[in-house]
Length: 452
Image (cartoon, rainbow, N blue to C red; front, side):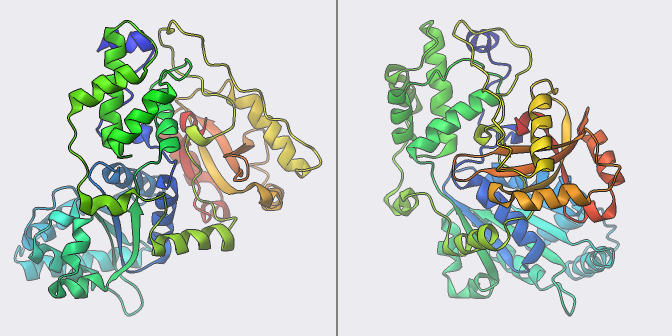
């Protein structure tokens, strides 16, 4: 493995199939679904369902949602069930254990009463618990019925427990059963993770390489990308397996470029089974389900200034990421992007000045450090950024306040960040010291490496 990494100048394996959140790709619909999930958990009260084919990235999305909730101070109010093959009694016991409840009466009725009391206490403190269930399609019928009953825990005005089901398409088939209609009626949002289209596969491969410290030109030729995209059917787990095998084949041949020959060898070795005909509906152009599309349209058009987290570095157009020290691969190094030109007549003065500060800072900032994300908005809403900069307290109006521009042409975003902290703990402490008016907008710690 060490020789393999040194050969390509990598600091870690880029195509592991374990859901490592540093490698979350927000292209295609992934970042949009994550944003919509966060919005739904803040404003919706029904059950949320996220569907996707095997290997489409549901568990990674679930881990990212957990991370996002933790960054917003809700980590202690989150329950994650990775094992769906639990009885209804075991589900109740697992939730109670995650919340640290003492259960003198371990009967289902006693556990439910203790859980309801704990949820009421958290609700009184302005907190609501989120239950995330992975591989929900494998849950026994009685366990699914328990999920429905848990969704009934509420005050006269609000739900006490928010539930997100991550599942394969088979869950829809199960929910078509008349016996599960009461549960189906409680699902208010349904998002679908679609397979990656070929252009997204190319962007995904390069993003993973850069996240693993690679600094050379993209080693995957267009022909190799095409073969990987077709054989993987756009499923990220399959893409990871094929890309890893193709890189290994290039290493064994002492090459630094992955062409269609290496891709063909990887495909032959992987021996993937064709996607079942019943799953063909997943291979349409990238889109969200109707409910998710409507929600995303609302977020984009009606709430352009809402502080949703920005996309990871693969979609940013700030300066190129400086990676950690790694052996230089025997290929031409990636050239750093030229600093973005600031047109003084298109950005208000404070915003333009803070954008220049960002450009001077990002090239020398330590990628292992953290900053605080205060705002993200459309580039066309620069007036919102200018107003925010104008009303910030004096304690923030110093050189630590910066503005960046990112995103592809036509979909550019402006972000406002504050500070440079050595780790997430220090950033969290600084977040707690922010004025209440700023904390109310939902700022969160963000890795500088991801920002790049």
